[in-house]
Length: 221
Length: 362
Image (cartoon, rainbow over all chains, first blue to last red):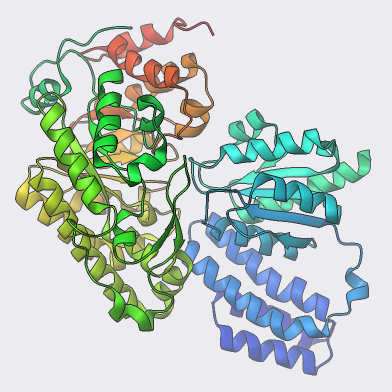
């Protein structure tokens, strides 16, 4: 790796953390002009910055507004880098279906989880918010998903997570897919109660957990 | 089930005077679960102040907890300022679309008229019935979503959070309009005789930083608090999630009672601001109240009391947030019965004794 590439990766990461979209776009353009490896630019530049932002969030240095700005900036950089991505190098990604359960239209947590999943190497199918339980099941079957991520911010709608798990059992695909639940009112004990595979208190930890659980799932298959 | 010796209002008045009471205060914090207690659909509250009042009254008569609350969802004020709602048949109303798409449309926003706009008149009517019919025995309050949180629903949560970083002036304008609506609604509510509680979930440190809270929420929240306290004796607030970074700000605003989420350190909260603010809450609404057994509810309740009963301004048992609609009724019974079991005065020995055996065997 040249010194310039190293520098650019470092700067890309910094500009995401610092929420500087113009600087990020400039750096990404410069990165592409130099014909550096684009996948690396995403993983070790933009996503690296997003990961640092996630850690700052865990440490209570950053909060939701800062995290959302960072993700906007990361996406601005992605817009520049993505068209130059060599897709062969990223084939065979595991698929994840994510969404906010029916009755809830708050999608901050889900969006962060989606970004974190993408940066850990998943192909993410985002069903959006207010998603009926059966839609998760149908989409997971259709695309052969390894992960279903269910999010809610409201105590009033969390029961729908249990409904999704029941439907997966009915369709006999419960064992083929890792079910992760998250959001404000969700806890490890709630995840255990409804028989979800995993829970993490915030998005980047949840994405890391998803990666681990899928690895185990594929090993045992 | 154990019996109370005093009405909730008698108990509240006696406590305020420092007199002896029959038991520690307890308010499980039902939200639209009151529809389950009353036996109606949640959507009935969208159309009838009478039904909403009846559900609040049924809940009071079922549990005899220490407050009767008129509240349905977070969006009554933002809806009255133009936000679009989703009205499920038997679930909580939710935000469909914010009132404006972009800050350039801010001129379209107007402060609410509580007697005319959308569901506000229904709520005002319900407050009147509730206060007239049970106000002689239980403190009745309207839970009003505060100026900062309501502002989020005017433009959308994501846009608002980004404006906080990119366009501070726009955020102040939104909060200003939101504050006027809060004041108009609270004024009409207090004219029905009820007290005011404020809900400010977006003020949580789980969402925004203490710095942003001070910059954008405090100026409007403190004006709202001052307005309420110019008319009635006190005001309480609930903020979900983490709040440690803003505890002293809450006390500094002159808020009289603060209900905390289960994620905070209750003991530390009492130590930090308990000499200025009454503390309530902290029983986990999801894993304990919704998903736990009755014995788990009992133990969690006693544990909260243990951590907080020495609070100089007092502690009231409460769940850490509004209860999920389908929270088992027997768990709510278990919480209030535990308050009766604890009785008054509370001592360490008594709490240790209660924890030394299991009451519920299921």
